[in-house]
Image 1 (tube, helix red, strand yellow):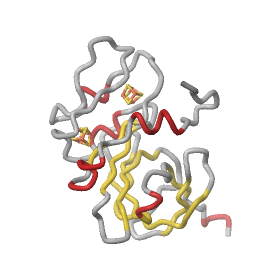
Image 2 (image 1 turned 45 degrees about the vertical axis):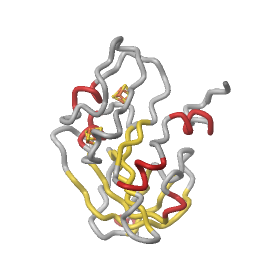
Image 3 (image 1 turned 90 degrees about the horizontal axis):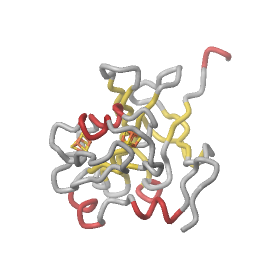
Length: 165
Ligand code: SF4
Ligand code: SF4
């Protein structure tokens, strides 16, 4: 199987971590885009519902029990690799909600339009910030509303710094 050499996952890798379609159709769930066997496991301990299964070896890749996942987003900000997202494909008829981790400044504001970026950092749309949640660590949980067809594309945001004019 081909794997990304530049840190950007390839299509086959993304397909492997896609939540099942029947689950996505009925509730918000986590999508864990973790592809490297590195010694890291805070995601499993962070989930209060046991939806990220305990690791047998700290180098394992995370495994998800989607039936247990509520889409709460707690695990999203536990991941030092910023590799975890929540997808709610039923936000509206045309839109999905994505919860993503964010550590940059300036912070977005609720209701603000920001740039939605793909996994390579390219802008693909203007998207609306639905919620900004402070957590107990330095990572914020940002909820954005995106066109449904971009729910598997957008994985970051860019907030334009308005202090420079
Ligand atoms: S979104 Fe919530 S329920 Fe789902 S895996 Fe993360 S912490 Fe657990
Ligand atoms: S915390 Fe993040 S980087 Fe670490 S194993 Fe879990 S998903 Fe992968």
